[in-house]
Length: 319
Image 1 (tube, rainbow, N blue to C red):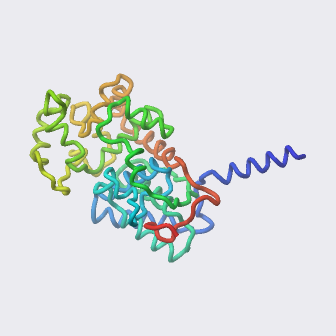
Image 2 (image 1 turned 60 degrees about the vertical axis):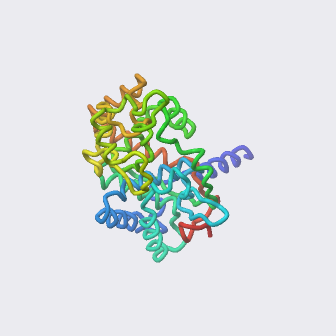
Image 3 (image 1 turned 120 degrees about the vertical axis):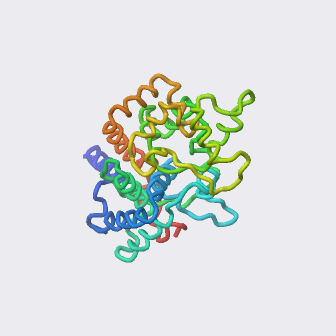
């Protein structure tokens, strides 16, 4: 009898800790509709909002788990994640989360977490740019802590080689194949020149330009990103041929030695990852399907559920 009670308790706790599709169906039935409406409205005005939200979700989940900590503003003396070098000035779309949260608070106060809003918004962004839609298990709660130093320690920089990338993703529970799949998110969006200028002007002690970079593409990038420029507004499209479409143009660019980051082009240096790059080009549906599954998996990293964390009333600050 005692053993049976222990097992019931164990499974009750286990189930409570799980995210669920349709989590808000009984408490805030309009939640996903409201969030999607805000994403759609913002996307109509600025196509860059979609890749911004996908990237923001990734940067949230890789630091402290998917707890909305990337949304918290810095309050002196603390510098929050969003103001860490990997995130500032590159992350955008915060106003979309704010607008969705404001509307949700007006219809179901204190119910929908900021972490879940971001997860839904990332899914809607994938879908609106031509990717495969997917169900988002929800029930995340919001964290109360956001530290710039943790973003630096956990977010893989664009200078990593394939072994380092594989390890960085393995640290978060992903396989090498899933790492290549998620890297395809670079098929939409833009990058600041400072993230790859070393490949153009100061690659190593023997050559200024990365020899793995297509010379014609390098010349084009140099025109867009002049040497020595410190203009924070200088940006280029990650996949110039279709910067607002979730397609496999990213992988085609890599095969053509036109991967923008070292961490992109390095995928050709390993037989297994190079093979995946080729498979994704041949079968775009395969990549879209795998990407959606990997996004669902990413959304489970280090989540707070049950009575952990809180439901922030304002996504920019803890209650």
